[in-house]
Length: 98
Image 1: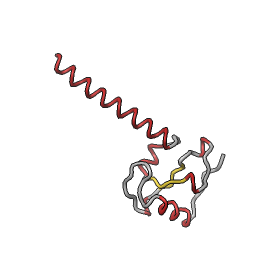
Image 2: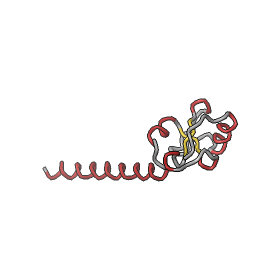
Image 3: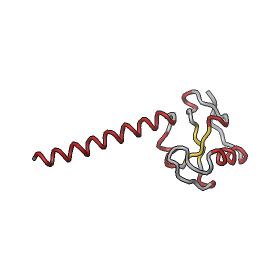
Image 4: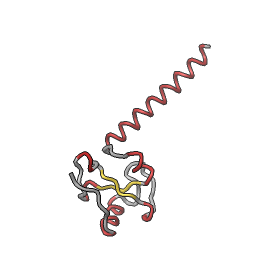
């Protein structure tokens, strides 16, 4: 397993350019000074510090993603979203029946 380390300015600029200055998770623009570098496959799950495993993320997305892979994280978001839509629809019908 690779160890967490501080990235050089060159690496940070490369990741920023690779992602066109936008968060790879939510798609919002991120200022260079506010960027975080996210491991697509977390180090805890066998990911590396290689450039192909790094992406730009806003601080909020990076914190929420935690040690999920990007795909696992997006699956969780979809699952939560489906649940909330179901609860909202269910509550609309319950109100009409009562």
